[in-house]
Length: 273
Image (tube, rainbow, N blue to C red; front, top):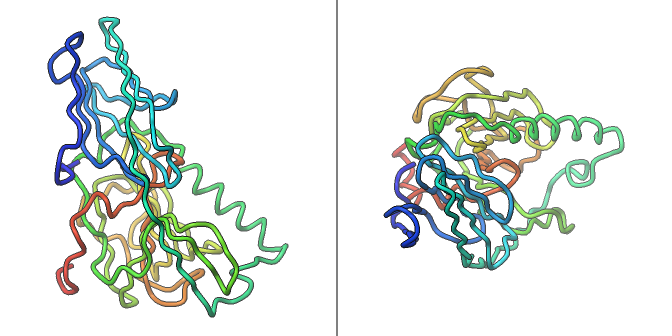
């Protein structure tokens, strides 16, 4: 993964090798942080083990509601251990009001519930993957260029009814605009019609990191296909629960949703896709 504009932490204690632990990224709610420990180290965050590669690379995720303090523990191959208390910055979340949705898309009917549960099951299966290849490390780019119409973490009020917070970034763009792979990975899901998200795709970027693409008008890749950053994935649409054409782009480390916009520079002007 490319450096995230600055290195926030470079931690190394006298009892461990020089530069034993580094973290790149912003310690804030909704952030993804890349770490590097000595080869052979074991890393855990708040008691949950992280996937650590042969070179010591690992990822950490701080969710929408992350506490103000997190406990990072590192156990080295020589038996030495470290504990770091990380201070997590709180964020202020927007409130987004969306009107004009079909009532069934706000309050599904009983016959819709089984379909929604099956959609969620398929998404969860991809998010549970722990692929050993760190495809994500070549870095990320915007999958489509357009106006950001909804940010990560905003509280959704749909047809006047409070609903769950938004777990991705919405990018408004014309129907048919090409969506490009933001990073290397393997396509793990292509669904022709999920209840809420319509034509939906998911990419596995390794080490438990995955991305989702929703409301597409078409998908141009297949499950199991390897993609490189910049490869075409499909096209923007308005399928599923959507009031206008856009791409919903989400990212998660296993089950923890993170804000993909924190990994990228500001959205370029339209026309640079």
